[in-house]
Image (cartoon, rainbow, N blue to C red):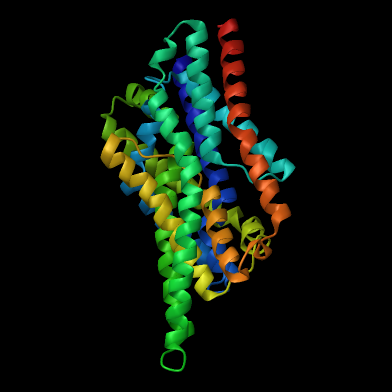
Length: 343
């Protein structure tokens, strides 16, 4: 009975986490569209909500498996709840401090912290933590911003030439409106497929046991639950955070907005899909890193150098990222050891 109550409480906490992910991270696929003035914020949020749910249901299982079983062999109901609490506590703290941190890093750090706590209490050996997957995840955090920035630079040059070649021949503004919509839909789909695991991934094993469902059906259930609450969070509260990356890092026009949007979408989708095809685990990359890097990429090209960026904001964001992994590892490890001392 106690285990069931902990499971229900944890699942509710995960739904709340998903809501907050939508509220805070909705800016990632939306910022380029709103920043370029292609769609109103309400229109962008509606598109975001629909395609986030679709992405979560169709491909959310790729990264849910990584968070749920890829790092630590099995996460029990107490550890799952502590993971969500640890990550949520840091996300809330960072939000209050104005730090745009990575939710993916927060959850992954908390799961690693649980693995370390398991080894301290003797539940598993240190070797049973899948350090190979941990290494791949950390590398993906380093590589994905570079790929996003490079793609944004290349795509910006392409769309800039496309815009210039169509002037006087076609309705350029209308064509780029459709391109913006396509970029937003793709980015929201990729966002849903990757970020839903941050909210519900740790409950994979626990849900299988509690509901007696096969692994695949469990992942679909968790993806739908997370995707729905991410969409609700984005639609209801997402408007409050869009302006940070849409306007403060660099200004966007139509070619740069479309380029940054497609660069974000391609990068997130590739890191969700390709590693899953090769190793069976999608990489939980930071959509925040990816979005900011995409906008930075077009900013550098437009200004022919670093003058196109607000370097103070950029450095502030990077420093906040560096804190996340060690802090969440420490919180999760400490909380688990404290709770176990009283159980």
